[in-house]
Image (cartoon, rainbow, N blue to C red; front, side, top):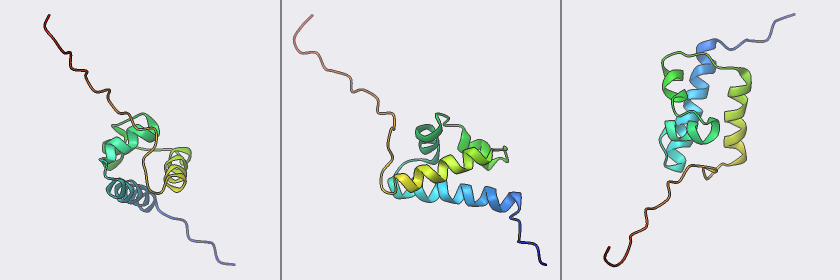
Length: 89
């Protein structure tokens, strides 16, 4: 009986990076911004590119998010606009 092919660590990492980069381009946000919105960690993308480890749960969380929100980034931080004050002081 033949064993099923097991994906390599580099193939799994490449798939995750590709998915983050493709989605980020699609919705018009930097990959670090995407990671901040999904994980609360804007440094995750850079660390991932440099070889940092990640869990299966993290991998699944990113893929699930993209599948649930195919055309828009939800829950992204939008800084409040500063109000201009009228009149003198």
